[in-house]
Image (cartoon, rainbow, N blue to C red; front, side, top):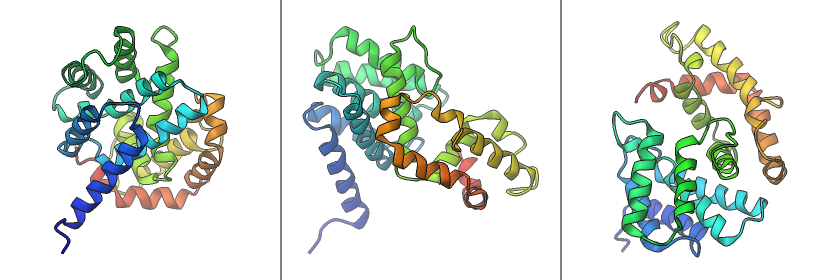
Length: 245
């Protein structure tokens, strides 16, 4: 008789996938600790997002031929990227820095050099911002790519739409105009097409190696975004989710 409930079985499968992606690069105590933090974090991205992110991060590292140590740094930053969402009233980036660096020092002291820890903190603090050459730009840029591609690779239009509206004031403006329909719909559709369509600025800062490696997934997602009815339907279905937190 199976002693595990369906959600417990799924949780084990997700953890197994995460372990496969990062095993050999990071200690088990670190992997388990971050997984538990994300699992118990109702205000943040869930463990299935983490599963996607580390798998995508591994591919980004391969696309750039990163060394084992550099891959470990990249995957660490990816795993810690959304850990700060748990702390209400704290900017999630600064929350991730605070949690991530203290967790590293507590669970795996001495595993990373001081310079590597500084790089990880920069990745957590400046991810999703435009390229900053003065802030260890290469790793910051790669982590930003992973953050975006984690949904793009899996064609999760709903997550892209929800997070875009939450994080962009212009898309978030006047959400009650026409309820979950009306002009608000049209504004978001236009902005998403400008961001993620074939000529979208979301792709402009992606490195050539990453763009080449993910060219099929990126092209498929661009085509999805240009399917305007699909975005409208996604907005309607996720209206409450967008403004739930």
